[in-house]
Length: 136
Image (cartoon, rainbow, N blue to C red; front, side):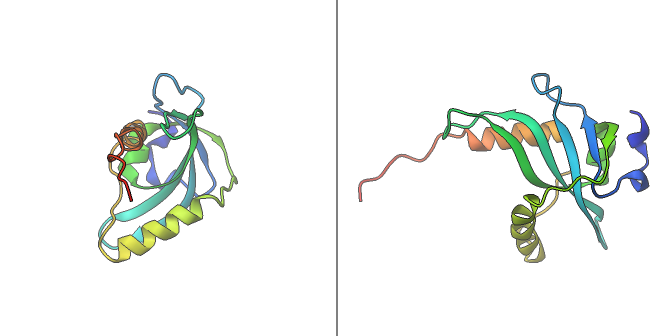
């Protein structure tokens, strides 16, 4: 890993290359917001662009995932190269607000796995078979 080792180097608005899934080599992570928790330490709220997540509800794959709360170790193990700064994605706020409300109630947490693993989990959840249709 390169310059991504120092957690204090990460800041809001940075875009990073990361250890992508093999079919998404141009995918990148945006750090939208950083907040601090007394037990967890820094929580990084990231978006991931350039993904190719299968979506059974659309012929087109999902190409952007707008909000994931992660701990520093996720960034340290995943990020490889800083590619831009001062970038914003207001689209992350809806997911952030929902997460924040659930987090305060003790019903949500943060990811401590690699970015690629997060994307795999999201894709698996989206592609789980739907419940059987019911007649009303």
